[in-house]
Image (cartoon, rainbow, N blue to C red):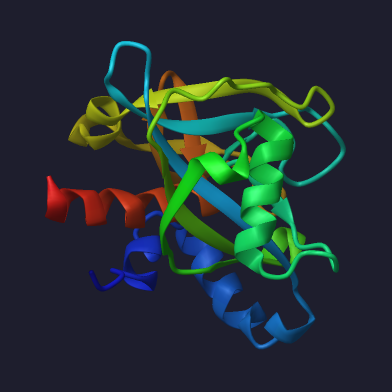
Length: 198
């Protein structure tokens, strides 16, 4: 299946951010890189879920935000896919060998932290035994597939970000959490692909 790509990302990006994305895109060669995993799995009830994490509160632009398991590319990683698998194992305890990676998704540039994020779509055929990394992960957010695909989860929220005050941003409301920015952009691509399949 072809990736829907950046057009789907931009639907979930705040307008102010779009200009910033264009302005900073030429600096991409100096950007850091990260790999993240959109991980689907069966819950104990057999219903398909998506694993997201609530990050710890810290001094940084992504403090206390919802995101995918994943993190920064390290020189010992052979690829960004290995980064995503390693970080998923470290952050939520899902063994890399238990994840079947179906596809790489469209990368997203995050201006506030100067990162290119490379997402991957993976599945675990069994219910994972999640073990959270206490230093980085506040909570696991297990989103039922039916909830994720419900059109009512797409909302608009007024937020104060690291680069703007009281701006309206498109977001997803998942399990009571407002998911916006780069994570929402990547989720929008995943959601559109699933719509074509389901």
